[in-house]
Image (cartoon, rainbow, N blue to C red; front, top):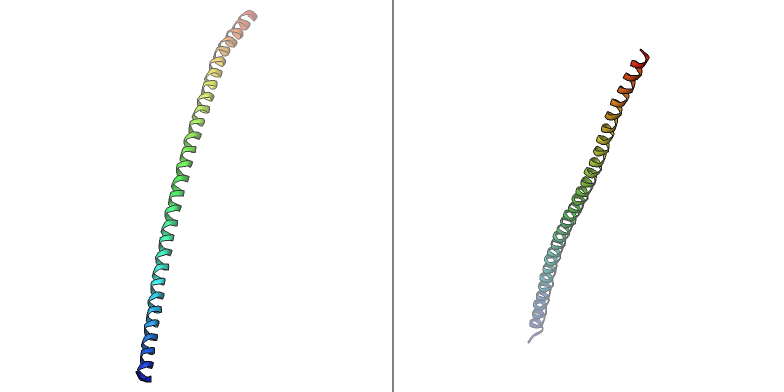
Length: 106
């Protein structure tokens, strides 16, 4: 083997090595890009799931608050009706008293 053949084989080996390195770098870029894309997709899915859970929790709390509000409104309405009933009976008694007082004075 001559020196020229040896140099030619070294150049071919260097070219192959450079091509292998270039291919490996391209594969690495593709792998990194895919990993980033997958990570972004997982992140979006996770955020969507957290948002859904948060909305479910908020809805459940709103339902509880509405039930408590309805209960308080019912109690308030019952007390108001009771007060109206009591006041109606007292109005009748006061009217009767005033009428009797007026008739006595005549």
